[in-house]
Length: 456
Ligand SMILES: [Zn+2]
Image 1 (cartoon, rainbow, N blue to C red):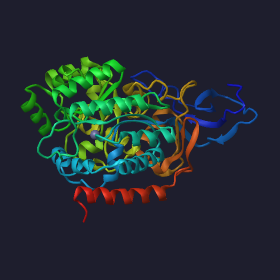
Image 2: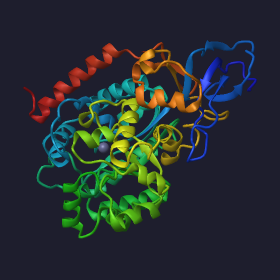
Image 3: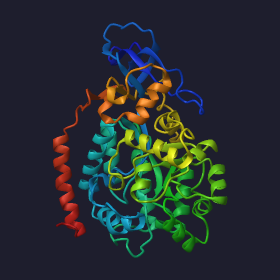
Image 4: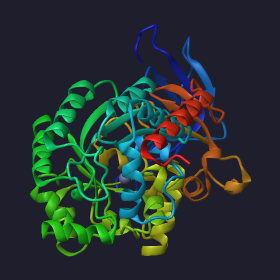
């Protein structure tokens, strides 16, 4: 441990620890009861540990510690629009609701939406996220995430295609889009826990020129690429009609497909496209609730796992979910693969990996996703002493994971640590004034709806 007298040190006594540091086929690692020491923002020890002078001591008896959840695909900017785009398939959902609403965003409403998102994500145990934001004002999202210390990879939507259904105010030309990207990258990439990524909204939103220039920018700056791909059959048909090629073949030709790319959805990937996905090293971001709500289909996650594709879960946007809950996505992901591939084809521990260690690997986040000394002290502590989650039987890994994946919801989350700092205690958010966040959101939404011509 460090000798720095100003460093806050905490000792959790007697936690049941699920380290998620095992190999890919058995990711749980050794589940055991132990003490866990934290100094500053790092885990410094796990084992039989004695408190040191000045340690804050926390009682972990009856509680289970998991790595903080890592969500691979969200949209902070859409949280304000929850409940405003129900009962629509993907392309109608975009054209009729999401694009007009995003076009009416201003800095104030993007900030309000990010505040709502961060509060909900932290309360649900999510401590790292990757996001696609709207075309402008992404600096507001970075600022909100930076203030609380959330690990966030985010980028501005690249959209320079002015087609019917896209409001004039939303897209910007390729030069302007890349100017915004450069400004955001210079200001925020590597700032604390923040990283900038190139985020084309999807193949149909970008001209070939913008896509290729963005890929070159990502290569030159060593950035990740995050986009939507192969979500809905109607979208695939439109890609074929415009580019005369498959979805992933188009991304590949544009230079956007590679090991630093992550692709949200990948519901419909067949034949040569499937081989291309596997060979590229790109990660798949699985959003089971959104795929169901928009009627997109079931992504073949169990077979991606078998093929070695890296997988992370994500809630996607609030208007297509309508929650940002990591535990909801965990259960939905496990349920859908049982339905599509058969019970046990994608085990509960693999689903949990797609929210922790596997998700961290998928996003290139080396210091989160596992509870081992040296990693960042992002933790979710659950209290599973509730008979609704199963009568206590054993502390074996498979029993604990069964309760977390299949039975638990957010009521089981007791404490969330973000870089060693408690941000949720006893199930309540700390240092976050939910009343004023909601009030700011209400005012911002009213102004967005007026600007969008959707006020009632
Ligand atoms: Zn999305």
